[in-house]
Length: 254
Image (cartoon, rainbow, N blue to C red; front, side, top):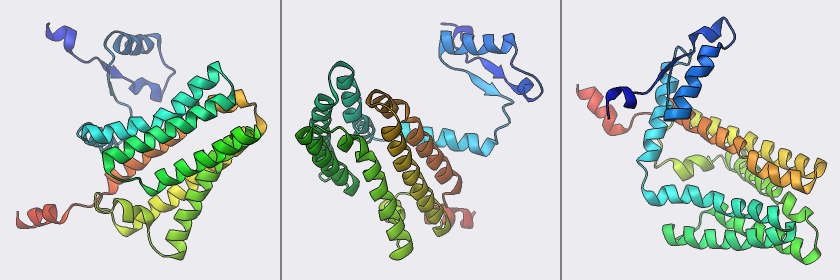
């Protein structure tokens, strides 16, 4: 295979600063991502440090052990089965599948880690309780408002830990893996509180204002919110992470 066939196309978007996209630019994107699947975008105006942070986060993800990547895939396992079942059955059958899938997920997580994290225990308990009430009372409102209760509990827990106990829960959980200044840990904690409130409110609004079909669809496209927030959190951490003591010592001795 020659280099012409393997080189990554370069797409210059600098012209977007003063004019609308041209047909040539559309063609460049089409050729790159339709035929090869990759493209290298230049003159985009994004700070090089931010671009490097994203690449660094990507490198760290791909360097993770397979078990860690499996955990990420397992997070989506129950909700995907729930949505798929709902498309061919009722909300009650989908709820039963969600309960079973979450139990299987928890067992697999326990096998991988030897324990369940606090939020995994809370999620399992809420799904069993609210799913059971949904099936027992034949009332879909219980399972629809379960995410609102979960996110509300997360927001309250983070708030109580940060502002009452004066302990940063995120630092307690991740401090051994990520070296951040205390001010950045507090920013992350406040950001997570705001995110949880946003997700709790958004789910409640969709569950109340829209049909069950539309709420289930929201469970899929609504993943753009946590995905965007998690990516943003990763970029923020990458930009503000402090050098380790060993690295600082190396720099001092140079």
